[in-house]
Image (cartoon, rainbow over all chains, first blue to last red; front, top):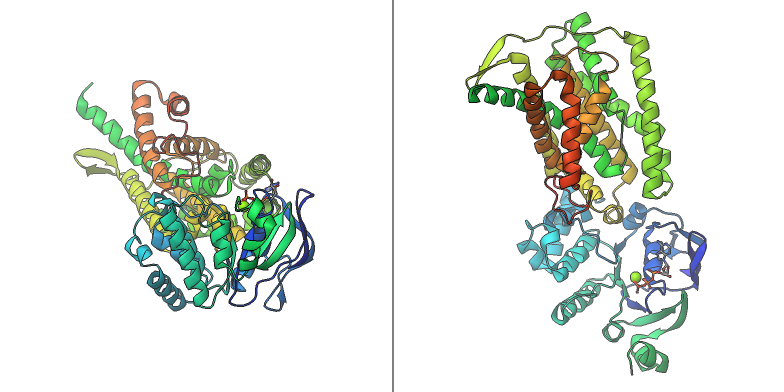
Length: 235
Length: 302
Ligand SMILES: Nc1ncnc2c1ncn2[C@@H]1O[C@H](COP(=O)(O)OP(=O)(O)OP(=O)(O)O)[C@@H](O)[C@H]1O
Ligand SMILES: [Mg+2]
């Protein structure tokens, strides 16, 4: 995306934001509360809710423009979004949640293959397939949300604070999963409050403040940056 | 007053309650999904009734066979009505209050148009016919056969609906959209199309109920509204958005109404419904089966 401005009811919250993710990269997006990270992901996935509007700028993915497309078309182009708060279907089983991830896949066979792959990657979901998603622990729900997004067979996976509220062991599981997803050839755009771990995992990172990109660079370099150390790492 | 008589009255109420359940499930599909309170729901029931009546009286079609016509025809009409009246409303993003208020106005308009259309076409005369009114013994009690048949058909259609919602991907998409619209959009579910489908299904179920009711009661262009109100009481009883709740709620209301009418007077049928509604609103505002912690629409069991 280039020079992007996005607004809620004519109040801009993203200004001149330019950001890119290369194939096979893990890119972290960090910033304080209200910086506009979630808004940025919503713009990319076409989720125009809460009177969100893209005022200007360009959005491209794999050589094609994304401007004005609805979520279904964007999913078809290969972008999957695990939203803040997960947005699972609590009264549906884990299996039904996963199947809905493959809602747009053309054939039953493709959907069955996607399911097999996702359960192979996350065996826990296979064990819990009959359980209602709303009765799972927070960490398990996060895995279902990621699994559901993977069912869409994305080439870019966007995760909005996947580790928030999880126990340290579960956070490690999620970060490990992100690594495995990238190893499978999927690029990842990761929004995190867990700045230290996110920067350690990411190839590159952006720091967003008040709707503007204030820093960008390799994750390892940003960890050393005095501003990041002061503002986000408490050093 | 013998216990046996009371049981008879209750059983008769249960049979009628099966129809209430079907009408209410149809209304709940529309409200639970779109927050569109369709006050013209009963008018689609009335149309279903007239379709069956006309086919039976003029073409000799068996009322049970005509269900196969009235359901799908009104389903298609419902999808059309949705495209013309609601599509534009739902396309632009609005607050929930705006949406509820606008959709209420639209459906009031629809109610007047359909009622007056029916009045022009079919006049205000009472229309009815005799069908399967020989006595039938069920579980030691005697009922007119048509009541038992109507209940059985309502049960079959309801079972079909539950299978659709629980066993198909399209049904899962409907439930997903009820439970989490944001999640559903991120899965690529076409919200406008699912809304149209549910509006059509809802009024189609009303039409089937109307066809069945025409076997039992006489029709006028004005029969619809009381059924809409009954259905509203049922979905508030069973929980907004809960299909299972509507089924149980319908049966309960049928029994309570029949017993209430038995001890008072037939004229008081609606008064009894309102009393039930008032009690539920005071004691369990989220419905009998929704835990109080859940707000309407968030807890959905199909
Ligand atoms: N629906 C909305 N309507 C109006 N303003 C909104 C809406 N959603 C978010 N905002 C505002 O936009 C700004 C950016 O919000 P956003 O949710 O993108 O931040 P964030 O970086 O994801 O924050 P957090 O770390 O708390 O998740 C905030 O000032 C917020 O108040
Ligand atoms: Mg956020």
